[in-house]
Amino acid sequence: MPDQAFYSPSYVSALVMLATSDTQFLLAYSKIIEGRFFGDAETAWLVDKAKEHYAAYDTALTRTIVEQELHAEKANPDMVEAVLVRWDGLEEVDDDTFTYVMETAEKYIRRQAILCAVMESQPLIEEDRQDEVIQLVEDANAIRLVRSVGAIYPEEIDPLLTRLSVRDRDVENIPTGIPSLDAFLSGGLRKTETAVLMAAKSKGKSMWLPYVAGSAVLIDQSVLCYTLEMSGDDWAARLISRMSGVPINNLSTDLSGSEFKATTRITESIQMLGFEHATAVVKEISPRKCTPDTISQDIEELAVQGIRIDMVVIDYADLMTAGRYKEDKRYAELATIYTDITSIAKEYDVAVWTASQVNRAALRRKTISLDDVAISFDKLFAVDFVLGLLQIDHEEVPDENGRRSARIQVVAARRAGEYIAGNQVPVRLFYESATFKEIKDIIDRDPESAVEPNVVYELDVMSDADHSDAEGPPDDAAD
Image 1: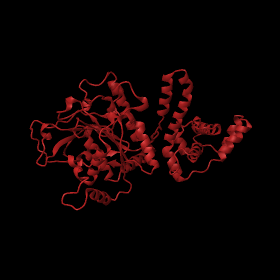
Image 2 (image 1 turned 60 degrees about the vertical axis):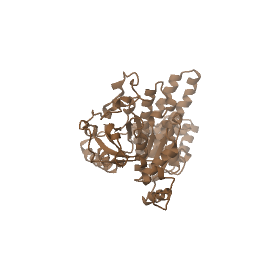
Image 3 (image 1 turned 90 degrees about the vertical axis):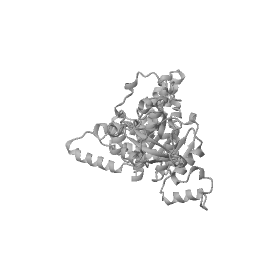
Image 4 (image 1 turned 180 degrees about the vertical axis):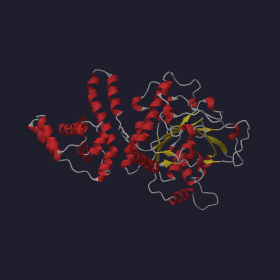
């Protein structure tokens, strides 16, 4: 089944089979699936009847129940025959198909709901009732599977704790490669999570993003990267340099003291890692054309090609456009973009990294907070981690090898925010190979620059209401 088209007739047939005959599917999807999402009346009848029967009796349909329901409704003979023919035509679903449909049905249902909304909008469009049209489509696009562990009874506590223990062991974290930072993140960024690096202009945002992308590939994770500002070739050069250790300037020339070209060393370095499936895809795209929907479509298209994306890197999200839901104000549009990006992380089970610019007032601070973000504060409410890349005067002075230092600060965290927010990790920047390395022996040349813990922000307690009176970006917001 996974090798077939996502919305092929065989996929729909399998979905209808589960929607009418499988209690596990009904437990998960009965609240969001509707008969009107299917093209024919007999399928619609079966799906709606299965929902109704499950709500009343917690059981799925059988052929006998179908016959009884048709008789009770006094359906005409043609309808009775059509429904029974449809029922008899449903085939048993194998384990692989069951798993595939269970994992993808939410997306299919949402797609069908949007199509129905578009069709239902036609009369409204003709009457120029635009607000109602938009509401219909937005409601359809907001359909999501409600996941719950259900009511917890005393006898369920031990099984629940067992599930949580197994989940924690099975969580896939993608480390940054900076030990202390990864320790603060409990091993790295998890799939389904979104992280943002805040930094001033030209202070390392577009070096950090190829760095974390390369770190993911080096542990056999596939990464989809978007560059909206830098050329695709230059961005890919940084990524390749990070993965291979070959300095960027040597990528197209002979290595000093070696008879091998840089390309040979790169190939050998990557082959030695023994990747099983890791792929790095770099896309140069215009900011006006990069929307959250673009990313969703690319992930799905790559999946059809057999490439399962583990991480998405966006350089950077502040340059994206919201697409069809574009807001009048840029700061409101950015909040929509970031919310959609976090939804992508959860829907496609990927980790997402991006970066954002801080305002001018934060350029020389020893610590930063969410208040220092440029243009839109609200955009960060939905993300899981906010990091800051800090560099004060003495850190900009190159060492004997021409390398500068900086600090990475955990500004805000949804996971264990009260314990890790405010912590900083000193790092050395290796511009020649797009690499960050932790340094634990930095001696602060300025005795008054001791780092004080930052204000603790817990993202999960923030709400739009907390800043609903904000009229726009701060006066000193950077471009």
